[in-house]
Amino acid sequence: MAKSTTPSEDRADAVRRFNRFYTRRIGALGDAHLGSAFSLGEMRVLYELAHRDSPTASEIGNDLGLDRGYLSRTLRAFKKRGLIETTHGADRRRRHLALTAAGKRAFAPLERDARAAVMEMMAHLSDAEQARVVAAMTTIEAALGEREGGTAPHPHGEKPDYTLRRHGPGDLGMIVHRHGVIYAAEYGYDERFEALVAKVVAGFIENLDPRRERAWIAERDGRFLGSVFVVAKSKVIAQLRLLIVEPEARGMGIGRRLVQEVIRFSRKAGYRKVQLWTQSELVAARRIYAAAGFEIIGTEQHENFGKKLDAEIWERAL
Image 1 (tube, helix red, strand yellow):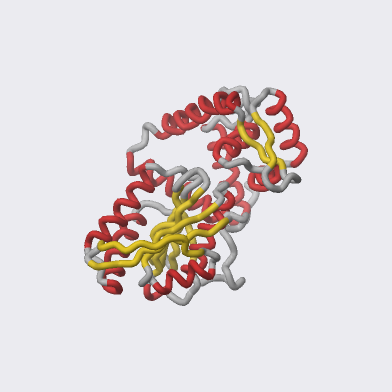
Image 2 (cartoon, rainbow, N blue to C red):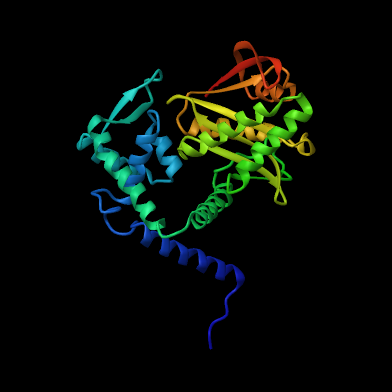
């Protein structure tokens, strides 16, 4: 007679089964990762060093959840092979890490091969099937990440009456549509504003670097409530873009939460500043930016979207 299991045990078995399947597919088992000379743990550390701006060892260890002793041994081995170097910033007590020229040369083919391996793994899937796979992975990351530090807590401590997640199929069209509708109704912007939003969204997808760029969707019961993007303006400056909150959802703290997510993500990604471009008439958004520590660093007058506007550039140090 088969032993009966509880629903929780069945779910745990399903997760373990998926883990075994996926680690086997991506070549994460064994001493070398994807046929390279590096283990999976070493590859994770190399990736962080290649995609961050002078992180410290403790920052990498905390974010990857690595044992301090293992990380120390890994970094010593990298240094012995001439792959990394240490520098000091303004605080002489903090040692920052960076790949050397040799380290960058060693990592480049690994990055290329890892991307090629994933593309090969998904090549037999149609575009729609690939989108569903990525959306499912995004859902897993968002659901589990929120409980493991992937999402900042609500500003006031209480459980919010909405959820935040990464973008998925259908979200980007909704974001463009709602910007066009809301800004036309509330500020009289013409279709050129909607066209600008569409251009920003298209550029985000075409050039997306998930380690340094992200979009958040706020929703309740599957209904869109708001969104925000962060994109790379330069190696050290992140740009907050397309913050919007549905009229029905205002007063719930969603705008503040979305801005805090951008700040938190940008700091973790290694940026030094966050900038944004807005208009002086967007009073509610400006209050959110000011409360989050942003300051105006420049202004300009322009005529766009069917009216004369006073644009502002805001900035916050991280």
